[in-house]
Image 1 (tube, rainbow, N blue to C red):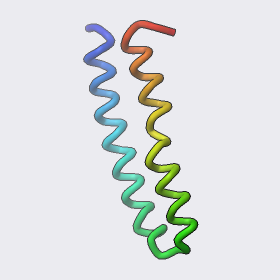
Image 2: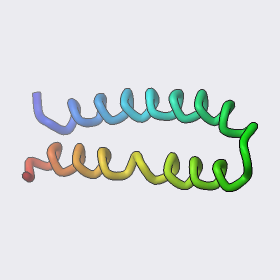
Image 3: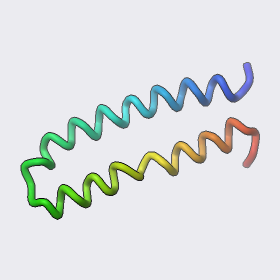
Length: 63
């Protein structure tokens, strides 16, 4: 099996788990000060990009 289907499956399952975790935490963050909310959503909205890029590089066969 090539790396691309494996990476696709891992990426979809990982992203689903990430979204569930962020939405669950967001319920608690929405009761906090707006600055804390802004920081949470800023980090949560961009934190997935680094693991996704590493996974895409691995799927393409790079190092």
